[in-house]
Length: 127
Image (cartoon, rainbow, N blue to C red; front, side, top):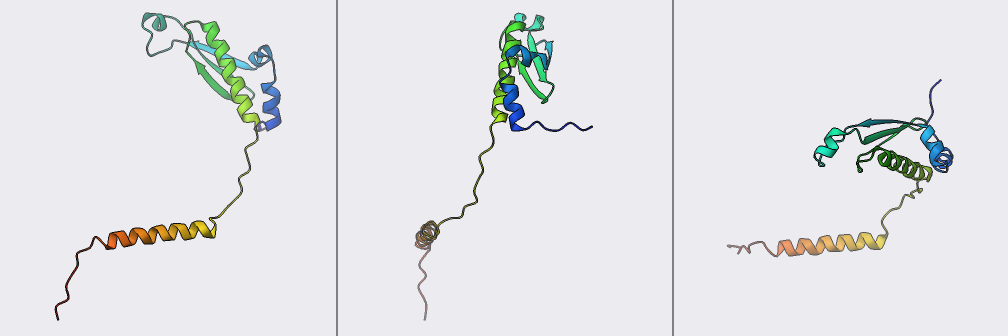
């Protein structure tokens, strides 16, 4: 059977879960972080990549030198993402420019055209 994308209500329900319940639905893996930090970051597996299995959300945290703290930060990031996904997108209404705005735009184009025409050389007619 094919997995379906969770709905807004499902995301809201998951975002309201406690941290322990949310952690049970996640798979975490620790790895060595890279980048600035020198010897401390190069020798410990303190960075954490966490996947929320029901939704497929993947977050990474390597802000702290503590693996425990990075796990907490990952859970916070997952909860934040669930809250964002639980909100329905605003419905956009198709609009068109008003007649007044069209007239202003065309008037500005005409004024610009006159400015450019005034830059041309004046040619005297030879008759």
